[in-house]
Amino acid sequence: VDSPPSCETYVTYTAQSPNFLSLTNISDIFDLSPLSIARASNIKSVEKKVIPGQVLLVPVTCGCTTNHNFVNISYNIKLGDSYFYLATTSYENLTNSKKLEDLNPGVSPFLLPGGVRIVVPLF
Image (cartoon, rainbow, N blue to C red):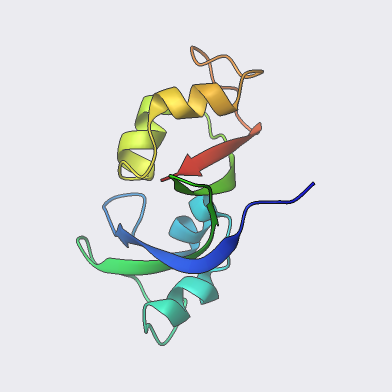
């Protein structure tokens, strides 16, 4: 089976308080290393805190179909997460809660179990 063509690209992500001011926390939601975001964003050290509102470049491998470009990444649910929170806050509207539900049919959208790995589609 042929897989869709792919390309290396970036998404922009704006650092936000309180949970997303370290490259480690930001890289966790994108399933990447902090170093990859630091390099793409021209940050000298992965230990350096970023400031609220700082725009970062996050490297991703994009899949392409006839009409759409997308990235599917893995994310470990944390206690208290909801699809709405993930879509609007953690991923800054790079996804939406309906797509999260559609791609994770075995996970109840009403009670997300901590520690379960889900697919997050970015588009």
